[in-house]
Structures are given as structure tokens and as C-alpha cells.
Image (cartoon, one colour):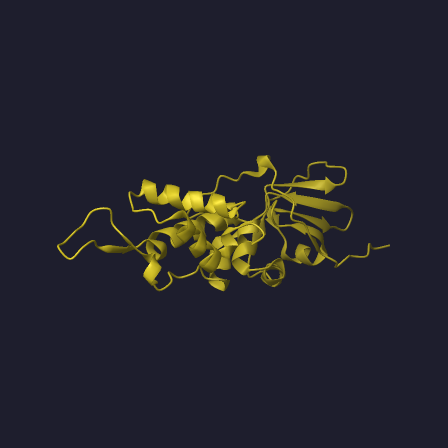
Length: 211
């Protein structure tokens, strides 16, 4: 008797295991599953293009569930599997699929970067607001210092990319500190801590876990 395929999907938000650090860099052909979900906005938005093949996916390894035996196969995740998914964990890049003879766990899931960005383009640089014009440390003319749109040209592009690849920051404070470190590394003037936090809360809440 054929097994009844369950269509109920449960999305877990467990912290990613340390052994799933994929070491991806900017410009990668593949991005972690959690990054694709963040770009799509929700897991429910990403599932249709995964199921119809517009977005391809692969996994680092497959195991029978719950026995845990390794399954030798190609890294490709067939698009039809997403309709049999019993449980999906975007944060830890894994999913549990109901197969013909056994249930299978896929870990280290990645998806095609180009396909995801074609459906959900990266955020364009925003128009520079008055509080984005942070002066350079040194004056460049008698009229004063030259304003630099650090958010639209430096901060937003850098951390939009980083959050997509590595996931959101655990807190507003950690995101603020990362912005400060980036600006110091680029030798740019650093805004006040509260100004940075205000900009993140207003324009990039997705950078923060649970925001």
C-alpha cells in the first residue's frame, strides 16, 4: 500500500548547528536556504518556485530519518520533494521529506542565487536622507566638509549582502557594533550609536533576529 503523503509543513526556528557553517562568500552561485527565505520574505513565498523548478536547490548531505543512516545520492533536491516536505527548518538549512520507502533528512540546503534574486531583486540603494549625510573627518574646502552618503553607498549594500548569506544579527546592539566596525575599517566618520540604531530599526529591521 502506498504511503499517504503529508502536506502539512512545520517551520522551525532552531539555531543553526555550528557544523553547518557553509563558508559562503559574496558572489557565490548558491546561497544558504535561510538567506533565500529572508530574500523572499517568507517560507510560503519561496515554496512555489522551488516546487515548480524556477529555483533549484541542493543539499550537503542526506540521511534516512529517524535512523540517521547516510544516503548516497547526488546533491540535487528534486522539485517534487517540496510538496512532500513534512518539516522545514530555514534557520538551520534543513528539511524532512516523505519519500516512497522512507523519510529523508536533507542538511546544508542551498538554493540558486541568481534565480532567487531574479524573483526578489536585492534592495536598491535608498535615496539619501538628511541624517545619512555624515561629514568626512577632514574638511575639503572653505565651505566646510564634504558630505558622504554612507548608508546608501556603504552600509546598506554591505550588510544586506551579509545578512542574506549569514543570517540576521542576534540583537540591535550587535548590528550597531558591526556598522561601527565597518565604518572604522573604511576610515569613515562614525555616527552616534543612537543614530545608527534608529536607522537600522527604521530602514533595515530584517537585519535583526525576530524584529
